[in-house]
Structures are given as structure tokens and as C-alpha cells.
Image (cartoon, rainbow, N blue to C red; front, top):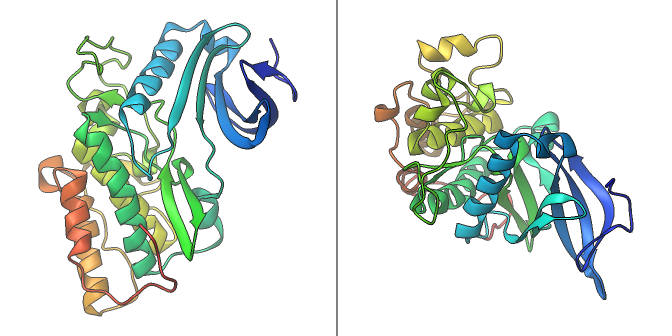
Length: 292
């Protein structure tokens, strides 16, 4: 069944599409009788719904989101299976601007980038606490949500996530959806080991992705782009070009350098470790007061 404005899913009324991805389409919807209460509904494409791999990734995304509770992760309200749309995730509607759109027009200062990193790493630390590896952290999966006197970063889209120990939240084994030697993710923000084999991605791979995003925020470009990504398999990233030599900028550059180390054992082992390192950086207040 095709989704059109006014179509219904239980008590939800579809209003307008928010975006289309490889696996599904996301719609803005309101609850019947309370249409000011907005949600985002992600519906699996009909052509994807006949693929065992796509359906299992969608189910895995729902299982992962069910475990998580953080202001830095979009919440899931319901997972709906059945007519009229097959598979659907009803999620918190996050108003704001995608970080990828911000990067298209501007760079961030060091202090605001530290704040961005702390926001993201709080969300990633929550995932890691539950044994969940995101595997696709990138600017297009981060929303900057307006709050009083500033913004808050919220992580979206867990379609490529996996449970670290190979089991879901019930303790049952997960089916293998990634074959040996396969790379999944987004190249400029993928750790070297994830490019070689996505099944090797663990907490350190998510740490690498956050560091790569923060590098991009300050530099205005990725540490490695699509034309030079093979270098990340053999070379360390160049220092992040902050354009500053003060203690804040130097300490920030050191954190990013460690987060981007080629070998996972040389990086921060967990998001919490990198979060703690950012918290120890001496810094002046950012341009506007932030709320975490």
C-alpha cells in the first residue's frame, strides 16, 4: 500500500515525507485526536521487505533502539509489523538541522566542536553500555536539536548497528548479515578495520567515527576523503588544522589524533574514555551557553 498524506497506521495519521533512504522512507505523523503530538515513522520499502537481510536489519534496529534511553539518541515508541505497511518504526520526531547540512555551509570552532563531541559520545556510551555498535556514525545521522540557549546533538538511524557479542537483547544469537570481508558504513567516517571487514567493528570503530566527525567539524573536510581512503589503511591522519596554538586547541587536537589512530588498540577503547578526555580539556566558554 502506498503512503499518502492522511493515510493511517493505527492511531497515527501520516502528514508528509521527511526523507528517503536505501531501506525505507520516513514520514512525519500525528496521533489522531492529538495531531500536535508529532512522531517520525520509518517504513521499510516494499522492495526491501522481501529481502531477508533488509527485514532482519530493520528488526535489529528496533531491538537496539528498545534498549536505549538518552537525550542524545532518538527514542523508539513502537515497532509495528503487519498491514497496511508491513514493517514500521514509530520514533521520536527530532526537529532541527542535520549536521551534514551544517557542514555544507560552515565549520565549527574548537569549543563548539568539543561540545558536539561530548553530546555524541554520551549517546555512543549509552549504546556501548548495552553492547550495541552503531557502525554508521556520520554527519547525516546526527541532528542538532534546538534547545534553550543552544542545541543538542541527537544520533539517528541504527540500521547498520549490531550487538557486540553476536546476541540480541534476549540472549539469542543474531543471524550473520555481513559476510567476511564486507565493508558497510560511510567511507570517510569508517575505521580502517571496518573498511577491511565490517564484522571487526567494535567500540573503537565508533570512537574513530566520532573523532572523524569532529575533525570534519573543525577542518571543513574529512581527515580522509573518498579519493584518499586507501591511505587510512596504512597511514595515520594528519593533525586536525585548528589554526590555533593555545592550550585548548592543542589538547583538542591530541584527543582527535588518538581517536583517529589507525590501529584500534591505540585509540580510546570506549566512548566513555574519549568523553572523559574531552572533559579534561581546559577551555573558554563557547559562543553561546550550552545545555547538555
